[in-house]
Length: 605
Figure (cartoon, rainbow, N blue to C red):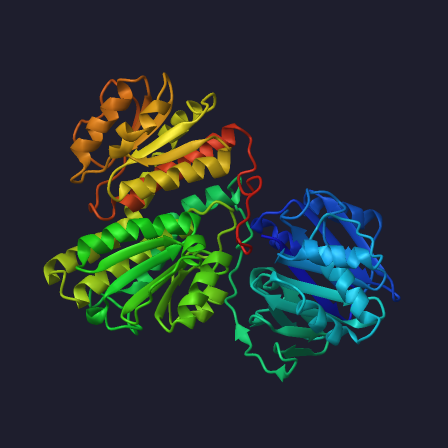
């Protein structure tokens, strides 16, 4: 979503703010802006479009000042334009904001009744004008506390003041916010990644907390306006994570990193000497777990769907899955013997974090599977299983999805073995197969040239359909999502057995239909469903790991991935679908790393 950066320094900050905003570009955005304090003057510069455009503006008209805030915006209230870009400034205060103010319309009416004039269509400007009103009666910190008590919704704020040119105030409710430390310079950021180029010493604000940072000092306050201390974390220092190397974009780099990230992830959880999975410290004894509930959004939800099939196959447990945005509003029956597992790439997904918060309030045991171990979801969970994928810059998730699947599979194996549901001999064989996964992904990526030919068939298509059964059904959903995200083509994923219950009406001559048919108990049935499509003129793209000659003359293109293990087939079958979406988008000249209207870290509801 939107990105915030603030810097309080002993030297001009505009260049570092721009560089940090560039590191936040991967979150997805449509406009950018910066405000610095110079001689008790708020110097605000904004643009629609990319940070590069803002940099050009600053080149022509430099901004000095040792205190400043910057922002990249993903539009919620108001179209993407200069007026709606952040910061939003009055004569005395400038504000950058992530999140949504749900009562902004009511507050706007109150302010307009007092004579306030709004220059934008955003909810954020309400915050600016409320603080401006409060500053007539109070000092900055008190003004911010009074203002946020009037706000309903979520926010991360960075605020500077015309008449107080030596500090920035940050505030958090719902949306993430971090503080970074350095010598003669301190930082505010919505994302620790944006701060890593300047510091690896970071603290995280919790809900309701405020911070005040100057070049020499950082103070924290709780919701009761009491001064508090915060732990300083030393975050990992990953090198060259913003370097595409020889790749055209981050997404292609991340797709082809998957053999290495899979190997790294597996090595973190496998004891190669004991040939065992070294997952320990379960929040519940696996033998006493009554039910597992898996919760996520988007791609993470699809990984939960696959895990449901694995856990049902490997264990005797009851398994439920839920979309986080639905889970948080349902009338739920919590049980202390249940384990609630939350899956999120960023660890900051607003709906998933809210669902976790509900679980915490009901005193049930929680586990998070995340890519960012310093994230809100990780810090609020009883138990954390990192996916060890490394930073993922492309908005559409690829290597993080594979990482989520690997960790969920490893967890499924371990729970099954500890409960006595899985024989030791089979358990050992599953671990051996897992050790060969990285090489199998590498072999699958070698099929890229065939998939490039497939991609050309989608250029004139009005839509497409992805079909699968069993654990291939979630992969069909994920394949359709990737094609939608990257190429903006309509695509739908269905269980192949449901075709006759409605979706067959969509089949017409030449419609691309991707059939995912691994060597499993559903294989013959999936072939029968495929024939239903062929009979109605659909153009079949067949993806399998079955070595038998099942690719007939009625199939437009066939792709065979390596066969490793029937339970591991979803991981390998997902890779060709990533490549397909990528190459279709490439042929259509789409912005692959930053698809329109989408954001990497969805921090609003």
